[in-house]
Image 1: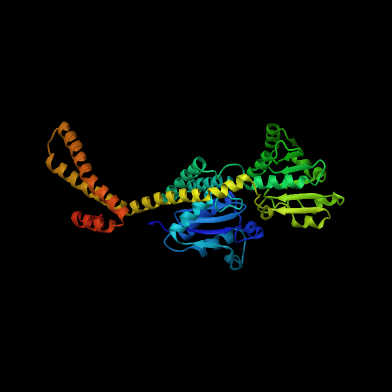
Image 2 (image 1 turned 135 degrees about the horizontal axis):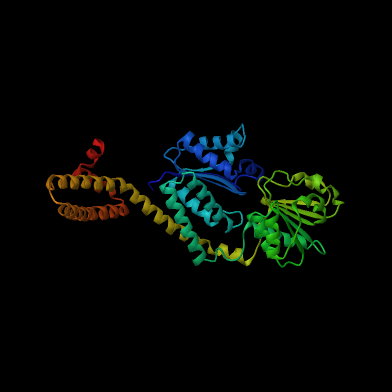
Length: 419
């Protein structure tokens, strides 16, 4: 591939939750880093995906800038000694491998819960931030639009997205299991971001009580009304927390819930589920008798028909990725001859303009208009065959020979130097 596409990845596969939360980035940090990558390192194409399960930097450059990128990321997060974190990062410098990996991440093959529906939206958001900051160049635009097209094919042609097997679904499954420990379980969902809202939707129509609370009261009220669930004011959370048997938190605020909030548990059984990065529930809460805490790493994929269907669909998804990668490879090969095509167009246009200038002295406007239109048509027809032959040669891997021939015939290299 013509591109020098690379990726630096820190994910749940090789980094525990405490490391991931130290590296996790919000949108403002991502924006700042994208601009620093351009200004400090000189990267003109870069994109950052940061979720609870991964923080990854995708970039386009001839040189391996992984060390510099990780150092800038660490500095932004206030980490002095980055050396001990280096082993948690995976670096992929092969363009084809890095491109394929982006497809696998975006389509859910690399997700903690396979086929996670949220990841494609997170990739779209990352792409939008990169585009807004002018760090999504030609290759990034091409590959991501191809990713989104492949995602549509996965929806239309496979069972990989059937049912619900996301982190939120796994959380709902765990909640149902834990609720069996109580006669009339009371569940509280704290925070109604994308994951919190999805969990709430998965728990609609359960036999146990589900209550919602959110910093933005209007959102909690609207969702509670839509789903026919209970709702409490966020400012009443501390006072009412002890009344719930299962608390699910997805607020990305470090130690938002701590032992001090649960000290009145009176040794009763209580389960807490923390879906946030950084962790919103202080692990010390487990020091209180009767309280058990699950963090995002402990939410395991549940065996279900949906999950089994998704696993069975993996070969089909991988085939879609391979087809999509062939499109990217073909486009990349054509980009190799794009400069030659542009040089040839410029050379022929110069010849056309010179000839018009030479032969149209003292001509009427009608004659100039006719000559201009005719000469443009002839030039376009002359261009057509070399362009088609160049593109065909790209697919055969023989473009270099034809480029040399065209350079010699039209003196393209000399033309470029003179300009």
